[in-house]
Length: 286
Image (cartoon, rainbow, N blue to C red; front, side):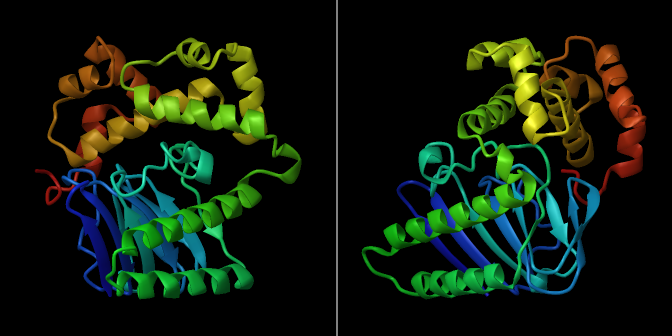
């Protein structure tokens, strides 16, 4: 089953995919005209999900938030329930005061697998039923109702993710907001800005303060977060495009291809050329 609603004026889309066997042979949004945030729920047994070329275990009864620029495939798409929406339908950044997910649920850089207990799954099933009813009901308030439901879904998933990934004693809203804002700023600027000092200045914090805050919520330092985001984008460009290493060098804000190659090899143990030859999928290259 695949249910959709589209707003012709804004270009906003909401999709609900439930047990769809043709979930697309290669379900990736990176090079498509419309890019969707995704919340995927594995309702079946444990399976494999491939995200940006790497395999991960996707356990039963688990949620997986995915960014609009991530590429992914599921081993058994018929077991997947997925909500997808684009920025035009609901912008998580513009509405961050309502859902508090930007820079954590979406845009943290790490892959979050959120395990659901039985009450959580029952609650999500009820919400899924309401989504299905509303997508099948066409009236003048349908769009507003679905935005409200999507907002509720994001809030629920964010709370579950916080409970799993952030211990209760570390729920300090001001520091968590700085952590989230840093991740968002990196997501927007990593192609051009590679230094912690730049982001610290935007946040009116010292680099040391940022490091102390990150020690509460992440096992990476701020500099490691920036570097990991650059490496991930480099892998995506090598994996899914035919851009030359020189083009990728400049696209990611490096001035010297040799320096970029050394940077990439230092973080992956492979040169860009070797990584591409080992990982590239001919059927995906356009």
